[in-house]
Image (cartoon, rainbow, N blue to C red; front, side, top):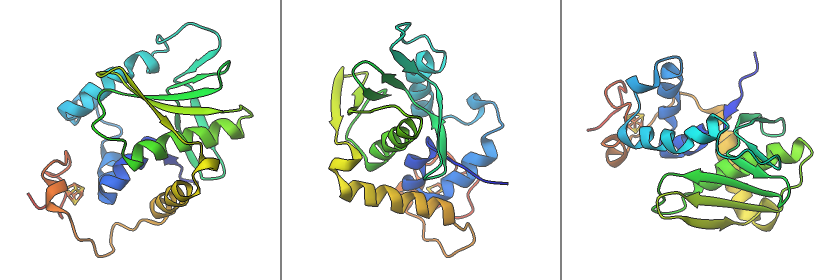
Length: 185
Ligand code: SF4
C-alpha cells in the first residue's frame, strides 16, 4: 500500500525524524492523551479551520483535504482565498519563521496547483500578534524548494533502524521522550 506523507508532519520531521514514528503510534489515540500544552494551543488555533467555521465566504476554501501526487503528500490547507489567490497558514504564535512552516505551505501550494488553482501569494499569520509574514512562492526561491525536496526525500526513505544520534536539547522538549529509547533527558 502506498504511504503518503502527512503535510503536518513536515515540521515535526525536521525537529526529529524519530518523532514521526511515535506520532504514527499515537495517531489513533485520543488527542488529549498525548498533546503537549503548546500543541493543544495550536490545535485550538486551528479549530475554526477544521470545523469550517473560520469564514462562510464562498471564495474562501478552508480546511479542505488536499493531495499532491508529485511529492506524495496529503493533508489539509488552512485557508485559500480563491479571489485574491492567497494561501494562508495560521499559527497560534510565531517566534520565528522556521523552514518547517514554509515547507508546510509549500506542500499546500503544490497540492492546490495540482488541483488546478492559481496561487499568487502565500503568507503565514501569527494569531497572537496579529502579524502576517509573506512567503516567497516556490518559483521565486529555488534554494528553499531544494531544501523542501530534501526533507520530503528524507521522510520517504527514513529508516528507524539506522544509526541515530539524538540531540539532548530537543529530547528535553519532546513529547515522545517517555517512549523513545534514544531519548536523552
Ligand atoms: S526523544 Fe529525542 S530522539 Fe526521541 S523522538 Fe524525541 S527528540 Fe527524537
